[in-house]
Amino acid sequence: MGHLVRLEIKALFTAINIESAGGVKQCKVKLFQYLDGGGYIPAWLVNKKVPDALTVVKEIVDSFQRDEKIDRAALSAVAKAIRDEVRLG
Image: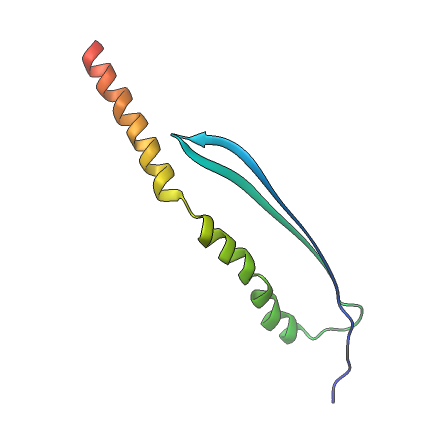
């Protein structure tokens, strides 16, 4: 049987409101993680477990994904600017 290793994991999660794009609310999310393996951890185990630990980040990104709405708002703003230029020009 292998040796047990005690892990210490700390995480800091921040979410900050940023300027809206075309009326679509946005925020910036940061996740800082610290891991102390406290001993020898085989590379194969780290390679297997780290992606599992990061799935929460992917789930958060997927939950708050608003790229289509932001792109539509930006496209609408550009289209309006072009229409206004044609009317004035």
